[in-house]
Image 1: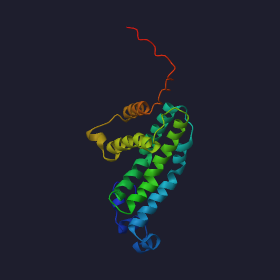
Image 2: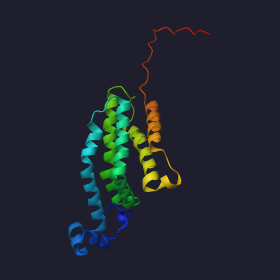
Image 3: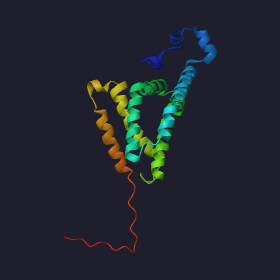
Image 4: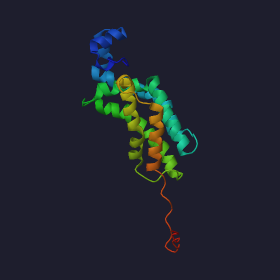
Amino acid sequence: MLASDGAQASFRELAEVAGVSVATLRHYFGSREALLAEVMTDMHQRGLPHLHATATEFHGPVRESLQWFLQQLLIGWRMGVGAVHAFGLTASLGHEKLGPVYVQELLEPTLQATEARLSRHIAEGELRRCDVRHAALELVCPVVLGLLHQVQLAGSRCRPLDVERFLADHLDTFLRAHAPEPPERSPAEPLKARRG
């Protein structure tokens, strides 16, 4: 299923790869769409330990923590997570039934685990208060698009990207954008005179 053309395989081709008849596959899954949805659900289940680590494992202060997170995303992407997302996107884009399955089983769990990590840093005052869902999208989406560009779309052959440098630059930009606001000056505090 995770081969480059796996999401486009017909029900007959899927039965052949599984070593069963179309009738057997239809008996257990009913339709090609139901089978693909079940595959995405299975992929979600297999990813749960990693999602749990993303959401809960402590990895130091905010910069160190988010650097760990982005490195894990990169490593995971190269070890198969990218193929999972490419499969999900290929099978689901523009599909009325599979689109929501991809969002629910693969995309949102990643974003929600990211939200949990960011929420902890917001609660500790390391990041400013914000809509944590927006912040998770800001952190994850450019990285996913960059990795799709380089790996699944073979952009590394026609327009290579230094992914490590991109991650470092992206993290710097994210941390500047979400830096905690300085404490407000009380009205009783005198302004320091400028020297010039």
